[in-house]
Image (cartoon, rainbow, N blue to C red; front, side, top):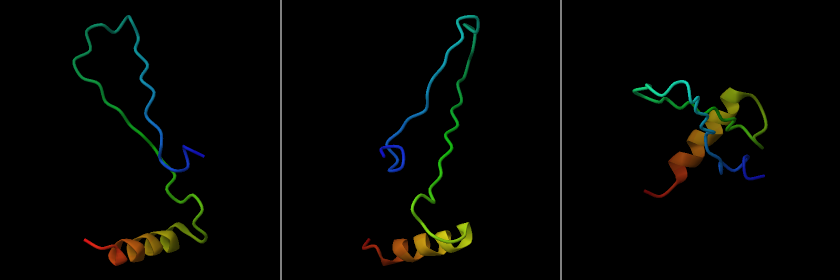
Length: 56
């Protein structure tokens, strides 16, 4: 349930043989359509409506 609500982090795996690395890059993929019915286009429209209704 925590993953579905966005409570997660990227696993960091380091290779001891790569001691000379200058920069790390992290990529995190997520499925933000959890629990939203319809197509991705419909889900995006719902998200935009909800965001527009939020107080600033």
